[in-house]
Image (cartoon, rainbow over all chains, first blue to last red; front, side, top):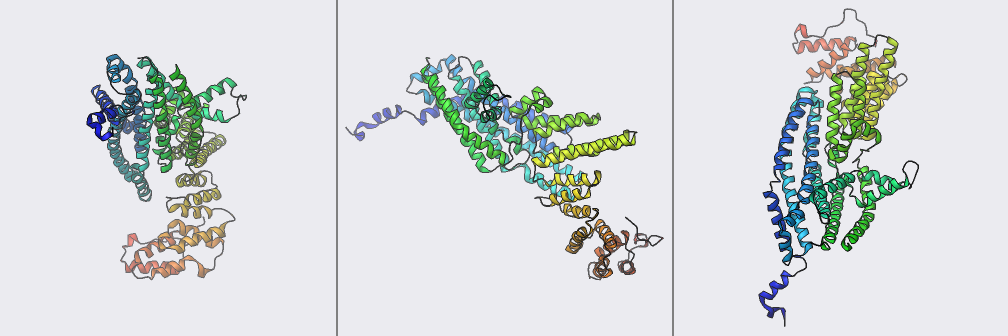
Length: 306
Length: 309
């Protein structure tokens, strides 16, 4: 019997049993996105907006010189923290909530693999993070545009003409740079890595609180990885670092993601130009982490008794 | 259980595999001067536990800004010791922010030293303490330059510190030269390098040649300070009369359509010591030609004498 003779019903049956279906994954992702929107995660944005306005007003009253820089630093820092928290909190409750609502059992009773389920969940969170990052970026750019104007006015009033012209040119060319947008891209990438890590942890954890705490701890430890790595590269068990500490630090280097590599906005905010290849490498590293966390999450989830 | 073991093994394999990639990426980022920040024990002590944690957690720039505002408060409270500690922390957290280095140096070498000058009664102690403040300012600038070798601003500030505070004109000239070799520098840094060199004993000839290069470049460079330095050096080096700059300026006064700038140059020459009759005559001729009112005409000192610098 040929495939042509089997008819549309057989073809549909075969497609339903494909190992991985984008359609099924997309359906789960879209549902996850809708579900998170219904849970009002975008209230985060309201907090972020108020934070930006508050920071701007506070900066104007207490900062002396470099207000534009301060606003940029604080806003990028806030974006960094908000996206990270959103990623962890939104992801941590996905699996426990589905278990509690029993929707997980309904979904997995259908011809949906556990891998598709995880990919769909992660894709849904990624969409939420993308929308949140875009909204935060829009708010940030409005604030930045306002402060750029203020900075230029200040320079015209306070500096000598030759210096003022050079400083204004610097402010104009150094505010809305492609590197700044690249940095925001890295913030987004980092939030996806955080989401992937949280999803992996939630695949073996039994409560969302445990997931949140462990995820945040791992992420924070990730900022210390460069220090741990420097011990790795040094001789083991030297006088300054006892052997057991050195081993612990080596384990951290191996198991914890290096979050400092994703922490480029602090330097971008001061006008450092970052080559495109650095962004590509960071994105590559992020993609690597994401794939590994997804795969390990699936390993944990596939053998888990539900 | 099997899934967990497999998962841990995959994580282990990934951890080992990523190690060299992360090391290379870290190196690459350091090469482009990204992440010049190094978390150290002293930084943790200075920033406080919360500040250090926030700094590590992606809020380094914001924490540095907060500490910078605190330093500003300390300035209002005239606490220069505390300011120095806060400046050290801010610059350690954001070593690529030029403003931090620049203003830290300015607060120490200018404001701090001025405070001592106004409040320390003992002249010997005053001098020693002021010098200490100058050196702290210099240290900030030198460390700033280490972290930002492309910054013309920090070299310019260092040159000004050497010139105005430490009276080391040779180093000042060198610093201004460094500033003028960096991208984005303002034109005056090149001038200042030559001006500072003119004050260095034993390098008069070199300074004269550099100043003459500026003088011959265009009449836009004919500034009061340039004339003063060149005329001083002409006297010191006994430059023959026919090579002195006043001849060029007088000749320029005859150029059609340049009466305004020629008059400005002639008056600057007179203000900086030139008493050559030809210069005064040319100035007077232009005054008549341009119909300059008497109260705005250049005035010669009662005693016609070249001032000594």
